[in-house]
Length: 192
Image (cartoon, rainbow, N blue to C red):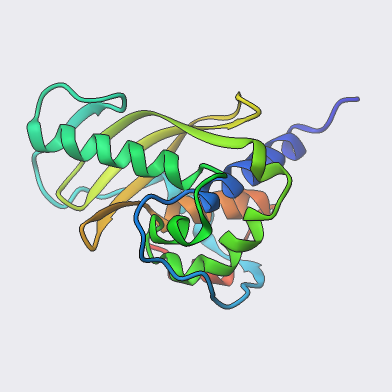
């Protein structure tokens, strides 16, 4: 049986979201929050833009870094935290702590963590470009059962409180995709 592309894409986005919610790599998150309601929002376009605030952009392969000492180290941390955020084995509180403004999304992350689809979804990072000391562009894919479901998605990582985190605008883009173009109210304040 064939599914319309939008439905397959939506399922893949749900998997990505569930994985993103389940993974976080630093430990001071909150696991409670208000339940968001769906509402129309322009957040869907937010995942594709990151404005560099300083010179010194340096591209680093996600797998580990060659040149640019600090940029290479940042790229490695970004990749590690991004993959952890989308790992279903990462505790919810850790995932919340790996998302920019994660406490605003805690209830969404918790709900996604209990999804059956979440247990088979993960993420891989193919490229990280450090734009400044606090922002980076990330190219990532969502895998369901090890097979690519969303390939080469643009994302943004931000440094917040000394930790590189998945940008809330990237998470909101997945939420919007999952909800057929409607972003939850928690996305109203997402950077973009």
